[in-house]
Amino acid sequence: MAANFWLSSHCNQWLLDREEIQLERQRDYQYLKEEDYKKIHIFFINFIQALGEHLKLRQQVIATATLYYKRFYSRNSLKSIDSLLMAPTCTYLAHKTEECGVISNTRFTAGCNAVVKNKFSFAFPGEQFPYRMTQVLECEFFLLEMMDCCLIVYHPYRPLTQYVADLGMEDAILPIAWRILNDSLRTDVSLIYPPYQIALAAIYMACVIQQKDSKQWFADLSVDMDKVLEITQEILQLYELWKSYDERTEICSILSRAPKPKVRPTSATPGQTPSPVPPES
Amino acid sequence: MQKYEKLEKIGEGTYGTVFKAKHKETHEIVALKRVRLDEDDEGIPSSALREICILKELKHKNIVRLHDVMHSERRLTLVFEYCDQDLKKYFDSCQGEVDAAVVKLLRGLAFCHSRNVLHRDLKPQNLLINKDGELKLADFGLARAFGIPVRCYSAEVVTLWYRPPDVLMGAKLYSTSIDMWSAGCIFAEMANGGRPLFPGNDIDDQLRRILSPPSEETWPNAVKLPDYKDFSNIQGGAVSFAVVVPKLSAAGRDLLQKLLVLNPAHRISAEDAMRHPFFADLSPSFRA
Ligand SMILES: Nc1ncnc2c1ncn2[C@@H]1O[C@H](COP(=O)(O)OP(=O)(O)OP(=O)(O)O)[C@@H](O)[C@H]1O
Ligand SMILES: [Mg+2]
Image (tube, rainbow over all chains, first blue to last red; front, top):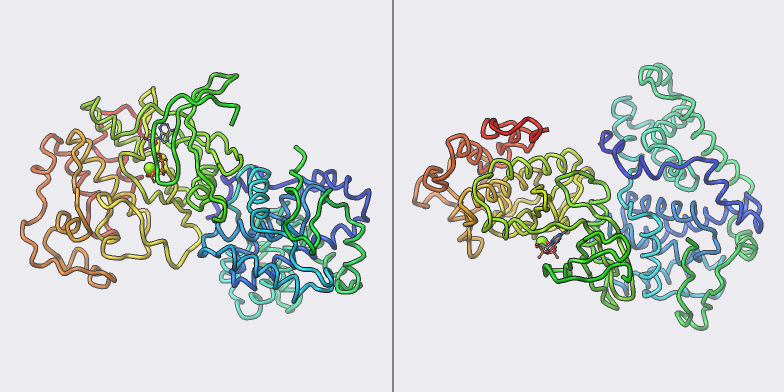
């Protein structure tokens, strides 16, 4: 598997520079503080997670959807396509590429509606999911095209279980490290670092939390510890952000400041709008 | 769509029509596979998605190159490198050269397998030959990456005639061995000038053609397969390869025998098959 990763489009086309990502975001930073920009993506990744769980998708599929989402907005402004359309579209595409059984269109849109109403009404008070399946399918193609058809992605979960087995501290480390990986989906690490390094960062953090000594084990691995620590830093920043932030009360006003596509359907007229604006090419 | 001028229809597949076409500016000749998108359907069909994402990862001279994917209203178009014919049509026009064609097939397969991809639908119609005589694996609509263990693969894989006995008897978890059996069938078909080796009419007929009398020692796990068929009363004795492929050399028959092993666990791998003495006469560059 590892050998495959090094030859994959994920490794060769989709490990991005932090600077490159920041540069793309300048357009959106005209409207939003960097912190708020982050909060918007965290919010929609929470949306993907909730929708995935509602549709009973495996965590692997949810992680794939999240990475598609991150890839899209690493190259496009929030203005290009409404995140509320992109987030479910990523989930839809991921469920097909990961081949986990077909979800009917009706079940899928019902899922989107349920999640908007039951889980995120604090962000969309009184609204329903404003898009139709035709728009999701149209958006699916923009997504595919923007990713240059690179749909096979690698995640840190597998390397994590392998490393932890080698480390021999399954019970103490695995559940915590796994949760850290889930959280890390809300950062940029999956856009920047290879999955095995992210897995190691999660183990490193879990060892600190559990007060397990893994110094020698890390030393024997001869990995680039600087990278592992960079990843750790980025995940810690997320935890720092969470400490002083209440999504339920704050996201509405942040969303209202976000740059938006020219058209956005309202709940009064679901689907009665022109196509979403394609990404600027 | 306007980028290409359609020249002629060259094939009809289960999920689309294939055209020969010319790029209007560069005059490059390509093959366009057009996939209809139904209004209230699943969007991009999963077979097309599989083909797109797998070909994106597999760049090799023995695997058909996907140049581009285009989208217009209700239609998805995959742009492939053009090949003059598929192996089915090629059989009629050529004789000999079986070893060179087979080694290219094996080389393409070895590459797929090294990247953890199973083709799962090998048959002459899905093997293309370009104008330089290079053979290319095509039609990855059923292929899948097997890196991530999946509990259950889709049941319908591999056209009946090229389906291995374990899959015919309901094996759910299979590996690269599935492609190796198909490669064996295609090899024999080439050696016989295009006559299919096991042209069964249905699953039972297919099994009857394939199976030699049972052997507890060589394939002890067969009885555990979900659709296990007791074939102890099958007459005919072990397939004699001298009769089945009379034109093939002894070395060729030996290789065929290793590809057509009933027990999937003992079927030869693509990597090993490429090193078989049958290919000894080919220049080493063939086997690289
Ligand atoms: N790149 C190409 N160059 C030349 N001919 C091609 C090319 N791709 C496909 N063809 C022709 O079109 C036929 C159908 O293509 P393909 O097998 O990819 O479609 P399909 O829809 O998956 O078909 P099926 O599922 O029935 O096998 C092939 O058997 C071949 O004859
Ligand atoms: Mg075909």
